[in-house]
Length: 143
Image (tube, rainbow, N blue to C red; front, top):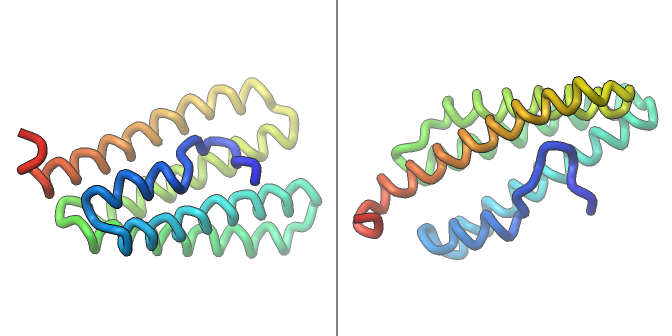
């Protein structure tokens, strides 16, 4: 499946890292949530590209529901991760990603490139938050 704009990590990347600290079950659960996240993003782009506004709105609503599930999941497995903070970061990421995809579809390439830089910075902030939480929760491995 092609990757939607703004996404670079794969489901197996996250699963491999989380498995080291949380085991197969939690890593697998997250991998499934993340796979749904990517599939919903692709569905949203396909619907928007086809001009199917109802299908796009439905996919977008389910994309945000999936973000809620991811945020709650992360908040439940690590005491240093706040579900509310994850939700805010994910919502910001989804909004930027949607705008970037629209920019591409409407051939606003300069806007798309500029926004992609913001998306990348936000993704790095999320990666830092994830790393910091793991390092705090499993500090015995990071001395």
